[in-house]
Length: 228
Image (cartoon, rainbow, N blue to C red; front, side, top):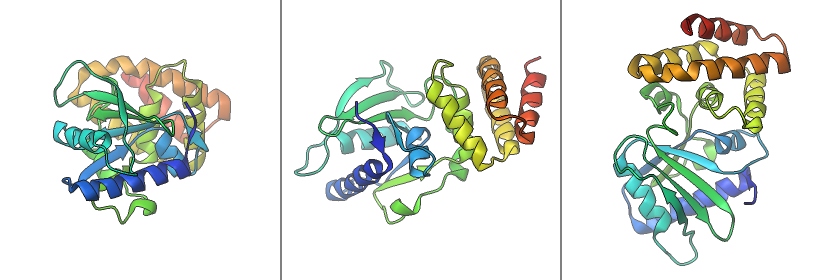
């Protein structure tokens, strides 16, 4: 699979906007949460895939139709997999553009049975200026603080996520937003407490890599307090 650069993301998303216009679909809103988000921010040169979250099954169906419907000279994506369950929360699918090696992972509301795209995350998300004119395929970037949280709960073997976390910390983060968002998610789903030791481990690794950062220390103290 080839690397997905910032330029490739912009090009493909503009084509999807044109395709959505020609298909005359209802407006579709997608939230970028991973490496694609960082690439569009200029914090990462390229990513292996682009992670997208939509809010409900209706938006998922619209996106599925947009990606899979053939139109001349416009991108058609091939579905690689789809979750076995078919409901509003946590449903997922993977798509690849066979010519350009552009891979999309799509999630409905919840990502890999872990964190949710919450109301707070939605309210903090912003449309990058490159897609400000989009009317049918609207692209929003979740905040840097929310990407930090999503990337702090990934598999510990994913070394590139630690590199991404370092890049995020170096831009300057509001750690109170991270703490408040985690508190909100834990208050709505107690099972997420199982993720806290993983976040602690990631924060400890970050501290070892980049030294003392006041906000990280504060986050670490909070995490250890709630872990009991």
